[in-house]
Length: 245
Ligand code: IPE
Ligand code: IPE
Ligand code: MG
Image (cartoon, rainbow, N blue to C red):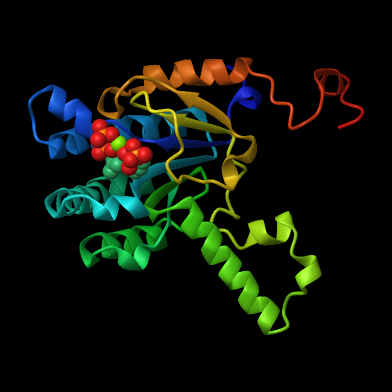
Protein backbone atom coordinates (compact mmCIF):
# COMPACT_ATOMS: atom_id res chain seq x y z
CA UNK A 1 0.00 0.00 0.00
CA UNK A 2 1.42 3.39 -0.95
CA UNK A 3 1.36 6.24 1.51
CA UNK A 4 -0.79 8.40 -0.77
CA UNK A 5 -3.62 5.87 -0.73
CA UNK A 6 -3.66 5.93 3.06
CA UNK A 7 -6.09 8.18 4.89
CA UNK A 8 -4.36 11.08 6.62
CA UNK A 9 -7.00 11.07 9.32
CA UNK A 10 -8.87 7.97 10.46
CA UNK A 11 -11.81 8.16 12.85
CA UNK A 12 -13.28 5.13 14.59
CA UNK A 13 -16.60 4.71 16.35
CA UNK A 14 -15.57 1.91 18.70
CA UNK A 15 -18.87 0.14 19.17
CA UNK A 16 -20.07 -3.25 20.38
CA UNK A 17 -18.23 -3.68 23.69
CA UNK A 18 -21.39 -4.33 25.69
CA UNK A 19 -22.80 -6.89 23.25
CA UNK A 20 -19.43 -8.63 22.97
CA UNK A 21 -19.47 -9.20 26.74
CA UNK A 22 -23.13 -10.13 26.92
CA UNK A 23 -22.65 -12.79 24.23
CA UNK A 24 -20.11 -14.32 26.58
CA UNK A 25 -22.37 -14.09 29.60
CA UNK A 26 -20.12 -11.43 31.12
CA UNK A 27 -20.96 -7.98 32.51
CA UNK A 28 -20.75 -5.14 29.95
CA UNK A 29 -17.71 -3.64 31.63
CA UNK A 30 -15.67 -6.70 30.60
CA UNK A 31 -16.35 -5.71 27.00
CA UNK A 32 -15.00 -2.24 27.66
CA UNK A 33 -11.94 -3.78 29.31
CA UNK A 34 -11.34 -6.04 26.31
CA UNK A 35 -11.88 -3.04 24.01
CA UNK A 36 -8.89 -1.30 25.57
CA UNK A 37 -6.67 -3.99 24.02
CA UNK A 38 -8.09 -3.14 20.58
CA UNK A 39 -7.28 0.52 21.21
CA UNK A 40 -3.66 -0.44 21.87
CA UNK A 41 -3.34 -2.61 18.78
CA UNK A 42 -5.03 -0.13 16.43
CA UNK A 43 -3.01 2.79 17.79
CA UNK A 44 0.25 0.89 17.30
CA UNK A 45 -0.71 -0.24 13.81
CA UNK A 46 -1.79 3.28 12.81
CA UNK A 47 1.51 4.71 14.01
CA UNK A 48 3.47 2.02 12.16
CA UNK A 49 1.51 2.64 8.96
CA UNK A 50 2.26 6.35 9.16
CA UNK A 51 -1.24 7.80 9.62
CA UNK A 52 -1.11 11.44 10.66
CA UNK A 53 -4.17 11.38 12.87
CA UNK A 54 -6.27 8.76 14.62
CA UNK A 55 -9.43 9.89 16.40
CA UNK A 56 -11.24 7.43 18.64
CA UNK A 57 -14.81 7.94 19.82
CA UNK A 58 -14.54 6.64 23.37
CA UNK A 59 -17.45 8.27 25.21
CA UNK A 60 -20.29 10.39 23.85
CA UNK A 61 -22.15 13.29 25.45
CA UNK A 62 -25.16 10.96 25.46
CA UNK A 63 -23.26 8.09 27.16
CA UNK A 64 -23.43 10.03 30.46
CA UNK A 65 -27.05 8.82 30.68
CA UNK A 66 -25.96 5.16 30.95
CA UNK A 67 -26.23 3.37 34.33
CA UNK A 68 -23.94 5.02 36.90
CA UNK A 69 -21.89 1.87 37.50
CA UNK A 70 -21.11 1.52 33.77
CA UNK A 71 -20.10 5.19 33.55
CA UNK A 72 -17.89 4.83 36.63
CA UNK A 73 -16.31 1.65 35.23
CA UNK A 74 -15.58 3.38 31.92
CA UNK A 75 -13.97 6.34 33.71
CA UNK A 76 -11.76 3.95 35.66
CA UNK A 77 -10.72 2.18 32.44
CA UNK A 78 -9.93 5.51 30.77
CA UNK A 79 -7.79 6.43 33.75
CA UNK A 80 -5.97 3.08 33.56
CA UNK A 81 -5.41 3.50 29.81
CA UNK A 82 -3.86 6.95 30.26
CA UNK A 83 -1.54 5.69 32.99
CA UNK A 84 -0.60 2.39 31.31
CA UNK A 85 -0.02 3.84 27.83
CA UNK A 86 1.81 6.98 28.89
CA UNK A 87 5.33 5.72 28.19
CA UNK A 88 4.41 3.99 24.93
CA UNK A 89 2.73 7.16 23.65
CA UNK A 90 5.76 9.26 24.55
CA UNK A 91 8.31 6.70 23.28
CA UNK A 92 6.54 6.59 19.92
CA UNK A 93 6.41 10.39 19.64
CA UNK A 94 2.62 10.42 19.57
CA UNK A 95 0.78 13.59 20.58
CA UNK A 96 -2.29 12.91 22.70
CA UNK A 97 -5.27 15.19 22.26
CA UNK A 98 -8.85 15.20 23.46
CA UNK A 99 -12.12 16.41 21.96
CA UNK A 100 -15.27 17.09 23.90
CA UNK A 101 -16.51 18.52 27.17
CA UNK A 102 -13.38 17.64 29.15
CA UNK A 103 -14.50 19.76 32.13
CA UNK A 104 -17.29 17.31 32.74
CA UNK A 105 -14.89 14.37 33.22
CA UNK A 106 -13.95 13.36 36.76
CA UNK A 107 -10.48 14.36 37.99
CA UNK A 108 -9.51 10.71 37.79
CA UNK A 109 -9.56 11.03 33.99
CA UNK A 110 -9.03 14.77 33.51
CA UNK A 111 -5.80 14.95 35.45
CA UNK A 112 -3.81 12.19 33.67
CA UNK A 113 -5.33 13.38 30.39
CA UNK A 114 -4.14 16.96 30.83
CA UNK A 115 -0.77 15.75 32.07
CA UNK A 116 -0.19 13.52 29.02
CA UNK A 117 -1.52 16.18 26.68
CA UNK A 118 1.06 18.61 28.01
CA UNK A 119 3.87 16.03 28.10
CA UNK A 120 3.27 14.93 24.50
CA UNK A 121 2.62 18.40 23.10
CA UNK A 122 5.77 18.60 21.00
CA UNK A 123 5.41 15.11 19.47
CA UNK A 124 4.79 15.05 15.76
CA UNK A 125 4.69 11.48 14.44
CA UNK A 126 0.93 11.03 14.91
CA UNK A 127 -1.86 12.71 16.82
CA UNK A 128 -4.08 10.38 18.80
CA UNK A 129 -7.30 12.15 19.74
CA UNK A 130 -9.73 10.72 22.24
CA UNK A 131 -13.29 11.95 21.77
CA UNK A 132 -14.51 11.97 25.36
CA UNK A 133 -17.77 13.43 26.57
CA UNK A 134 -17.99 14.37 22.90
CA UNK A 135 -20.93 15.16 20.67
CA UNK A 136 -20.79 16.51 17.13
CA UNK A 137 -23.83 18.74 17.61
CA UNK A 138 -22.53 20.01 20.95
CA UNK A 139 -19.24 20.78 19.25
CA UNK A 140 -20.92 22.74 16.43
CA UNK A 141 -23.08 24.61 18.96
CA UNK A 142 -19.97 25.58 20.91
CA UNK A 143 -18.26 26.79 17.72
CA UNK A 144 -21.36 28.86 16.85
CA UNK A 145 -21.34 30.34 20.36
CA UNK A 146 -17.68 31.35 20.04
CA UNK A 147 -18.28 32.86 16.62
CA UNK A 148 -21.31 34.77 17.94
CA UNK A 149 -19.20 36.12 20.81
CA UNK A 150 -16.59 37.34 18.30
CA UNK A 151 -19.32 39.02 16.26
CA UNK A 152 -20.68 40.68 19.41
CA UNK A 153 -17.24 41.98 20.35
CA UNK A 154 -16.56 43.24 16.83
CA UNK A 155 -13.77 40.73 16.08
CA UNK A 156 -15.74 39.03 13.30
CA UNK A 157 -18.10 40.38 10.65
CA UNK A 158 -21.33 38.41 10.18
CA UNK A 159 -20.83 38.38 6.42
CA UNK A 160 -17.44 36.74 6.82
CA UNK A 161 -18.83 33.73 8.67
CA UNK A 162 -18.59 31.07 5.98
CA UNK A 163 -17.79 27.33 6.21
CA UNK A 164 -14.08 27.91 6.46
CA UNK A 165 -14.45 30.50 9.24
CA UNK A 166 -16.95 28.46 11.25
CA UNK A 167 -14.83 25.33 10.79
CA UNK A 168 -11.91 27.17 12.35
CA UNK A 169 -13.85 27.42 15.62
CA UNK A 170 -14.28 23.63 15.79
CA UNK A 171 -11.94 21.68 18.04
CA UNK A 172 -10.89 19.58 15.03
CA UNK A 173 -9.61 22.62 13.12
CA UNK A 174 -5.97 21.71 13.72
CA UNK A 175 -6.40 18.11 12.50
CA UNK A 176 -6.16 16.97 8.88
CA UNK A 177 -9.56 16.48 7.19
CA UNK A 178 -11.33 13.29 8.23
CA UNK A 179 -10.74 10.84 5.36
CA UNK A 180 -12.11 7.57 6.67
CA UNK A 181 -14.66 6.76 9.37
CA UNK A 182 -15.00 3.16 10.52
CA UNK A 183 -17.78 1.94 12.80
CA UNK A 184 -17.63 -1.52 14.30
CA UNK A 185 -20.45 -3.77 15.58
CA UNK A 186 -22.77 -3.66 12.56
CA UNK A 187 -24.60 -0.43 13.44
CA UNK A 188 -24.84 1.89 10.48
CA UNK A 189 -25.14 5.36 11.98
CA UNK A 190 -22.81 8.10 13.14
CA UNK A 191 -24.31 8.61 16.62
CA UNK A 192 -23.32 12.26 16.91
CA UNK A 193 -19.67 11.76 15.91
CA UNK A 194 -17.89 14.45 13.87
CA UNK A 195 -21.02 15.63 12.08
CA UNK A 196 -19.28 18.52 10.40
CA UNK A 197 -16.05 16.73 9.60
CA UNK A 198 -17.75 13.68 8.09
CA UNK A 199 -18.91 15.74 5.06
CA UNK A 200 -16.58 13.99 2.60
CA UNK A 201 -15.20 11.17 4.71
CA UNK A 202 -15.49 7.64 3.37
CA UNK A 203 -17.77 5.62 5.66
CA UNK A 204 -17.11 2.00 6.47
CA UNK A 205 -19.18 -0.33 8.60
CA UNK A 206 -17.99 -3.69 9.82
CA UNK A 207 -19.89 -6.34 11.77
CA UNK A 208 -16.82 -7.06 13.92
CA UNK A 209 -17.36 -6.04 17.55
CA UNK A 210 -14.79 -3.54 18.83
CA UNK A 211 -13.08 -5.96 21.30
CA UNK A 212 -12.42 -8.32 18.35
CA UNK A 213 -11.20 -5.58 16.01
CA UNK A 214 -7.48 -5.93 15.38
CA UNK A 215 -4.94 -4.62 12.88
CA UNK A 216 -5.87 -7.32 10.33
CA UNK A 217 -9.37 -5.82 10.19
CA UNK A 218 -7.91 -2.35 9.90
CA UNK A 219 -5.70 -3.42 6.97
CA UNK A 220 -8.79 -4.75 5.16
CA UNK A 221 -10.59 -1.44 5.69
CA UNK A 222 -7.57 0.46 4.38
CA UNK A 223 -7.44 -1.72 1.27
CA UNK A 224 -11.09 -0.95 0.59
CA UNK A 225 -10.46 2.72 1.22
CA UNK A 226 -7.61 2.76 -1.29
CA UNK A 227 -9.91 1.24 -3.93
CA UNK A 228 -12.60 3.90 -3.58
CA UNK A 229 -12.84 6.96 -5.78
CA UNK A 230 -13.35 10.13 -3.76
CA UNK A 231 -14.93 12.68 -6.04
CA UNK A 232 -15.73 15.63 -3.74
CA UNK A 233 -18.61 16.60 -5.99
CA UNK A 234 -16.63 16.42 -9.23
CA UNK A 235 -16.95 13.89 -12.05
CA UNK A 236 -14.64 10.93 -12.59
CA UNK A 237 -13.48 12.49 -15.83
CA UNK A 238 -12.46 15.67 -14.06
CA UNK A 239 -10.52 13.68 -11.50
CA UNK A 240 -8.75 11.63 -14.18
CA UNK A 241 -7.94 14.77 -16.09
CA UNK A 242 -6.81 16.72 -13.06
CA UNK A 243 -6.88 20.03 -14.96
CA UNK A 244 -10.26 21.18 -13.60
CA UNK A 245 -9.45 20.36 -10.02
C1 IPE B 1 -18.98 1.20 22.74
O1 IPE B 1 -19.58 0.00 23.10
C2 IPE B 1 -18.33 1.91 23.91
C3 IPE B 1 -19.09 3.05 24.41
C4 IPE B 1 -20.16 3.56 23.87
C5 IPE B 1 -18.61 3.69 25.61
P1 IPE B 1 -21.05 -0.05 23.70
O2 IPE B 1 -20.95 0.05 25.17
O3 IPE B 1 -21.93 0.93 23.04
O4 IPE B 1 -21.47 -1.53 23.30
P2 IPE B 1 -22.87 -1.97 22.72
O5 IPE B 1 -23.13 -1.14 21.50
O6 IPE B 1 -23.88 -1.76 23.80
O7 IPE B 1 -22.67 -3.41 22.38
C1 IPE C 1 -21.42 5.68 20.03
O1 IPE C 1 -21.89 4.44 20.42
C2 IPE C 1 -20.50 6.22 21.08
C3 IPE C 1 -19.22 5.58 21.20
C4 IPE C 1 -18.77 4.57 20.51
C5 IPE C 1 -18.36 6.14 22.20
P1 IPE C 1 -23.29 4.25 21.16
O2 IPE C 1 -23.39 2.81 21.46
O3 IPE C 1 -23.38 5.20 22.30
O4 IPE C 1 -24.32 4.70 20.04
P2 IPE C 1 -25.83 4.26 19.81
O5 IPE C 1 -26.55 4.47 21.11
O6 IPE C 1 -25.82 2.83 19.41
O7 IPE C 1 -26.31 5.13 18.70
MG1 MG D 1 -23.07 0.88 21.37
